[in-house]
Length: 106
Image (cartoon, rainbow, N blue to C red):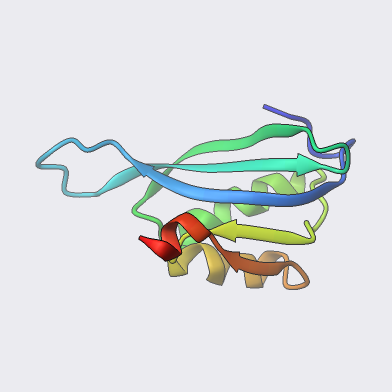
């Protein structure tokens, strides 16, 4: 995973990736955040287990990144999952939000 305190992150992508296992009651997914620094370099910042894409799960991921020294990125890109946007507004309220064009067009 990329370090968060030495690189100012310009923008981040966030998405939840589901396992696809049938019969799961809790809907576990991997919450993934990829950051891009001012040099245009991409780094995995987080790959964490989450319950669905809940606000609480995303909050925990963002708080962990903030505790490791992550700055508020200029822009966050994600799908329409409301949990991420709610957590982002709470933890990094100054970060602008943009819906992923691929998800938006699908």
